[in-house]
Structure formats: C-alpha cells, structure tokens
Amino acid sequence: MTRTNAREIAVHFIFELGFTQESAQSLLEEFLTPEAFERLGAEEPLYAQFPNAKQREYIQQLVLGVYQHAGELDGYIERYAQGWRFSRIDRVAVAVMRTSMYEILYMPDVPNSASINEAVEIAKGYETPEACAFINGILGSFVREVVGEDAGAEAPQDGERSE
Image (tube, rainbow, N blue to C red):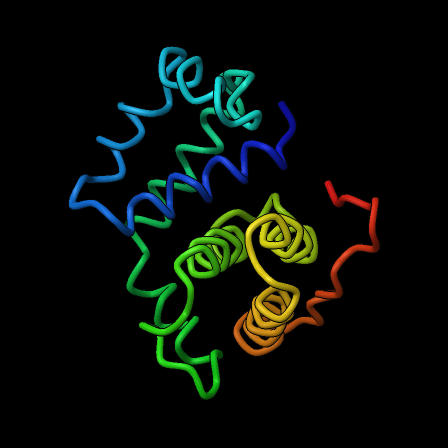
C-alpha cells in the first residue's frame, strides 16, 4: 500500500465521521482492522491490502488529528470558500480539504505542495472537475495566506503522482 492509498483511506474515515456521533477512536477501532479490510476489500479495491504499522499510524494520525481540529479546519474552509456557506460544500470535498489542511498545519514531514496535489488527485475520483478546481483554489489560498508560501497547488498532469 502506498502513502497515497493510506491518505485516501483516511479521507474515507474522515468522511464517515461526518455521518456519525461515533468518536474517531471508535471508528478506527471498528474499521482499521484486518477483518474490516477483508470485508471492505471485496467491494472496494482500495481496501484490498491491510496497511502496515507505519501506514496505520499515518491513517490514525490524520483521522484523530482532523477529528480533534475539525472546528479550526472548518473555519479555514469557510474563510477561503468565498461565496459559499460551509453547509453547502460537498462532504467529500470537506473531508479532502480537512485532511490536506491538517497535513499542512500539523505534519511538517509532508510537503505542502504534495498534500495539495494528493488532495486534488483524490478528489478527482469522487468529484467533478469544477469541484476539484474549487478544492485546489481553497487549499492554494490557505497555504499562501496562513502558511505564507507559494502553494505550488497546480494539479499534477494526467499520469503523474506526487509522493
């Protein structure tokens, strides 16, 4: 399993948290197990391989961190989604942006441009091109204004992957 796949699994779990009163820890205990991956892998190829210890740690850090900082991350999304109320933004887009923003703010070992490029690539599997551009724009503005650097947020060309 690649880090890209681990990131996408984390996005799935973060998305799921938007529909439950369950804590992030409870969700991880339920779904980040070999049994759950075996069950889910029958329908979704992303779950065909159970993550190794390092990948599980990464998924857990993302899911628990986003859960803990959801209010802060949602505030940034709302701030940079000019002309959009947070409640109108698609939940998949929110999960993708929360994940990337958390990486940018709290995981210095993940380059900002890689996080944004991966977010856009993940979104391409679930969202329209317009929604992907929206996500890219919000994340690029976020990095430029909050982190104070050029985001390098252009989406990779077809066939290219970061990290």
